[in-house]
Image (cartoon, rainbow, N blue to C red):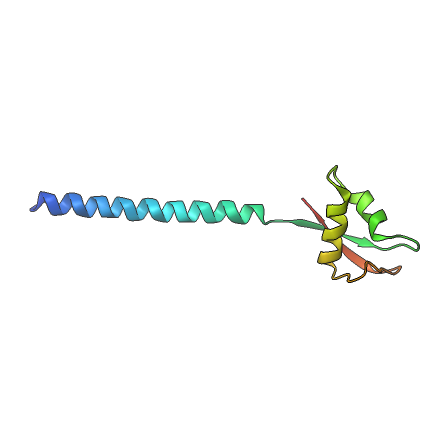
Length: 94
């Protein structure tokens, strides 16, 4: 292959490199941002007398327990934190 117009060749290669690097940047930034959103969950069957606070104490990993209580309530659509024995709760863990 013979290059006829050197200026056009360099412009084309520069644009091609720019497009490739932008595409790779987009791909990697998307992968990284989605990695932070991944949560794992545990199912918990509510026993008689348990409260959301009690359950949060079981699964708390050293963070502020109020945050986990709130996350459990949001994840399970608990409007007033009322739970009943036998109910299966989804507990977010990360």
